[in-house]
Length: 115
Image 1 (cartoon, rainbow, N blue to C red):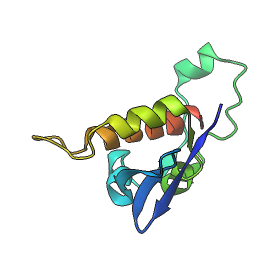
Image 2 (image 1 turned 90 degrees about the vertical axis):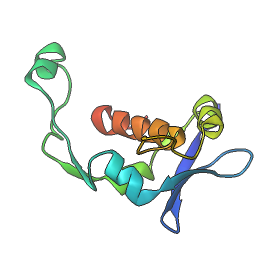
Image 3 (image 1 turned 180 degrees about the vertical axis):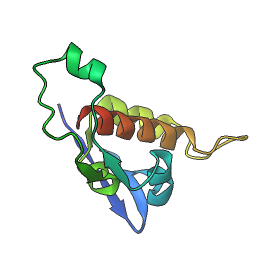
């Protein structure tokens, strides 16, 4: 099953696909969408109790969001869904549906580790 990478070119985030790159949007908007350029890894006490075997040595480590973003890979289904989402925001929405989907996956990866 192929995996498709993420890259930044000219300040814009793209996801590779078989049909050419899918434009997500400006890097600064993606970073704003996750709350800023840095992410500090943390685990709640409930998570530590629920998963006592989990390695939490990385707690407190701060990572660069742009670096994490560029290491993300995606399956065919995600890329197809991303490409099908509108690239423009509508109404009072701050993010387009396409960027919202991407930011959601980035947040998931920041919270749970890279997919």
